[in-house]
Image 1 (spheres, rainbow, N blue to C red):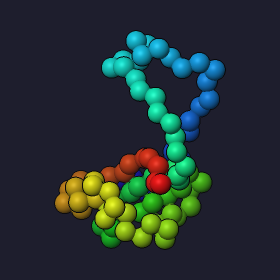
Image 2: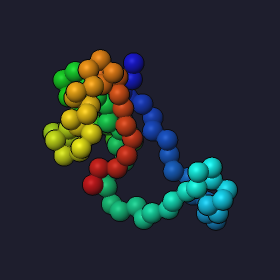
Image 3: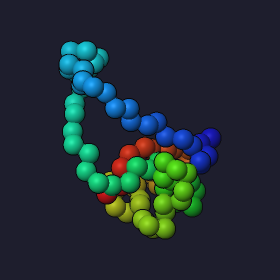
Image 4: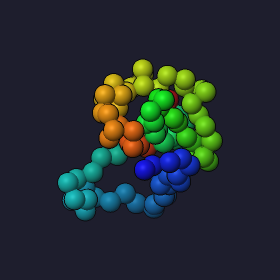
Length: 91
């Protein structure tokens, strides 16, 4: 079962970007706008947000399941949804 805190993967700086043909299935690059790196954990009592420093971000975003389309899918996932996590950016 996924239980916070979990250390997220970190970005690594590189001198050159790989050509798309070097990535299986291709690759895409996009600008990173300001936001907080966060891990989301689905628990029976709701979604818990963790920063990359393992701090609780949930008080800053008290209803994360309401502002993300996956929220309803997570709530309706039943037992599977109680052991679910995602990594991304909250803006």
